Image (cartoon, rainbow, N blue to C red; front, side, top):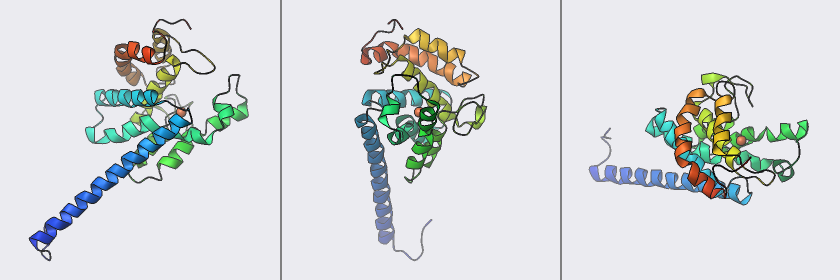
Length: 227
Ligand SMILES: [Fe+2]
């Protein structure tokens, strides 16, 4: 809307200034996301390859499930930074090879709330913070932190839940070897409708199939590796 109190040249100067500030804000927001991603890498919570792969998969699944293009940035950030709250969990628990005690499990299970409390502080990442908060919910209500069910769980959180579980199953960890692609898919399907959203699983399977060889090459194993 044109302002009758501003001359044309003043108005165009003002518009240029607004555009410049918007660009600066976007650049700053992107650097914050990259910095956190780097932090996760340094803490060895996720590697660069892992998080880039998750973000790419999340976007492909989101597009197939008709999440509007203008919402995809928040989905991408949630896929990249959903576990940022693990920074608040002691390494001795995150990397424990043996069985976790109930107390240790309870502390680890607080990480989605920690992720939310960090991401929500950044203006422009509010939606991503909510998606991160709910990435360990199960569609049957047995997940955490809120015990949400079905479509009450934000769709991007349901997407992150499936792709993160697949990635965790096929990746090598310091305390166990990654499982074969076929077994990981079998487990996703077996838990469809209880832990995972069945439509998200079905949408993700062809994508995982397509990328399986690249994923296993990056993980230093093969898609037919023994359990
Ligand atoms: Fe998590």
